Amino acid sequence: MVSRRSCIVFVLLISLGSFSYMAESSLLLLHDDGLNNFTALPGQHPSPELVAHHLHRIVNASLSRRETLSSYTTTTGARDHYSCPTGNPIDDCWRCDPNWRLNRQRLADCAIGFGQYALGGKGGRYYVVTDSSDRDAVNPKPGTLRYAVIQTEPLWIVFPSNMLIHLSQELIFNSFKTLDGRGANVHITGGGCITLQYVSNVIIHNVHVHHCYQSGETNVRSSPTHYGWRTKSDGDGISVFGSRDIWIDHCALWHCKDGLIDVVMGSTGVTISNNHFAHHNEVILLGHSDDYMPDSGMQVTIAFNHFGERLIQRMPRCRRGYIHVVNNDFTRWEMYAIGGSGNPTINSQGNRYMAPFDRNAKEITKRVDTSEGKWRDWNWRSEGDIMGNGAYFVASGEGVEVKYEKAYSVEPKSAAYIDQLTLNAGVLGTRGNNLGKWTAENNGLGAYDDANSGVFEDYDEYSGSQRLYCSDNFTVVIISLTALIMCFCFQV
Image (cartoon, rainbow, N blue to C red):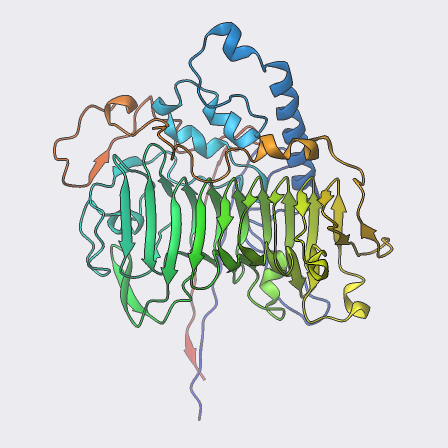
């Protein structure tokens, strides 16, 4: 007789709030019933089109504000060396504040798109990385980056000086963490590299991630109370696995063993913005496989990125899900820019696509290993994209005759501002500009004692708002949160 163990889990989540149309569901169900499947994930937005339309409106509003206030810095004499306002709504949200260094956690209010609810370490203490070593993946030393990311409490992680952190193994994050590299030149390389597995609310900002290779076949700690055996990793720059509310912003990624960014296995609520990608083959993978149904609930925003030199394909490569590609600068590709299989929805708005000189690689899009009879119904559309050097986008979907988009189409206002929107893509402050170097003093916290050891700096009035998060898009008051887990195990 075969022994089986069954476990039934009931979770009751009761909350009351006042939401704008951007609010998300508290609890969603997940199941697969064959071809007529319904897949929803925790954190998945019920109307992705509203998120896309809202993003486009705030971009155009930000650009209009820039035109109106373009002479603000000169006329007021405000000290601002960062071309503010830029029209980029993320950057203008925090960089236009001359005192942003006193309120670093304001950054958590500035995300847009599907990852806009990522809190990171907002409301938590500051953790100062003072040791660049990574010698022990099971017992990390206090002061190291690994020691910070495994903690259970929300942390805002900062760097007082330039650092090259060569990882011995995957850097496995816990939830509610912000990696804030502003003010320092931070490079992360080595084994792994960054792994976000079954976590939520992580912000990765202003770091270089490159030369990541496969690692594993050893124990790695993922929390203060748990470590476990890790099989061989793929060697991705950043791997997002079964996670939600993730924001990757102003990073520079290049030269990794596998992908630069992978978002797979039921991840959703992700924004990839203001990054610089270069020197790589398979750049971004979204979705685990064509047959993995939970990825139908994946929602990813890709905005204001610069896809630079020596890139070949997958910018991104999508399997299922809803992917909003908006206001990016694609300067070249060798095979294709955007590919997919498994019927993903791809909404391309206001991008600039510059095709390579190879006349056989002018097409922006590629349906991977799929016949036209199947992909004609996939919802792939181009709106207001600028296409140069012979680039063309093959649109498809219900009510859309397959056509070759070569003109300026509807041309959202923002498409003509690609240079301005992506001007600062990548890591900020790497050319002799400190961009607000971290010190305890400029965050109103006083000096810390030992420069050779990691420190937790308490959160105070200069550092942001309370843990309860109220964004510009919604206000929520939690009246009650009750979780009841009942597990019945039985032998058959």
